[in-house]
Length: 420
Image 1 (cartoon, helix red, strand yellow):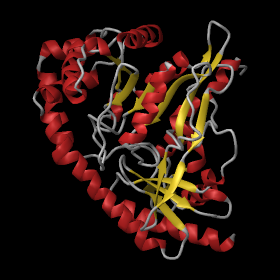
Image 2 (cartoon, helix red, strand yellow; image 1 turned 180 degrees about the vertical axis):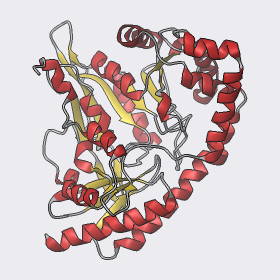
Image 3 (cartoon, rainbow, N blue to C red; image 1 turned 60 degrees about the vertical axis):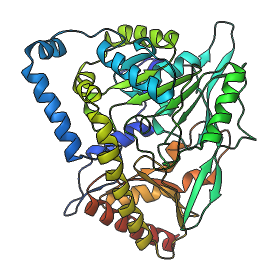
């Protein structure tokens, strides 16, 4: 089959394709599967009960149910949901927002595909602009967003601060990170960061935002794990949005990855662009996610679940995963990123022979599925050995499975160090 040049955007070598395929990998023959990869959130009974009640109420309302499955939504997305969310975000950010500041997409990947190509690539004046990532490593899915003739990402390697208890933390290398109005189309960072669980400080965020504002370049914040939902932030962090910021949210990590609902909070010129892209690419975003979550927003049930259930749930899982990692580490030269947010242990296997891609391969053969770190270091201009020594572990799953998976992973790593 002959494909056009456009088809290169869908290369099977993509990191995000590998990550998603690994979600359905089969267990080894006569063995067990330990799924520590992917981005599936935990199945939290109280959250699922609340969503099930909302779904039952929706199904019993003939008018609402008929509209949800039988009518296209508006291209900008569910108006009542957008209005309710705007009211809550106005209070959170202490800034007036309306439904016009919000657009719905069919998931965060759809959001970033439009945004990255709207602000990077070839401009009408002939200039070329990129998306600047203040910290590498960053989210694996950014790497395949370009629909331009060449790559659009330019990353700055993170500053590494070594901490006690085998931990380290990334920071923005402000002496290296630059925002140039002639060559930077937008700046993008995730908070918390997938893969590392890093939450950049308020001070760092303020400096990045100031540089963007001075240069007249928008700042895109990926809040898929952050505020206001799912609220997977376990350190002090002030919610941030202004009229130079494009905030991307999602219902996935709230417990709804299957309904594919992305949310963009921005000035109306940006949300109108998203509206038009929705109409052109898919007619309209899906109604299911907003219909299910709207009653939870209106009743403040969601706010209660965030603080009382979701955050404690992940903190408990994090403690168990860290305990398992430290107990199994022995004398291995490993560290893990300070887990400020999200649901991952970003583990640094310093000097591991063959790199963590080889560790990923060996572990997968024994049923332990993770994500090798090199996929997250996109957009760097020089090779960084650190990128080949990191591995992402998802601790959202069953506690026993996560603990045993980590123990098995470190046994495999120990063999790799010894054989190297």
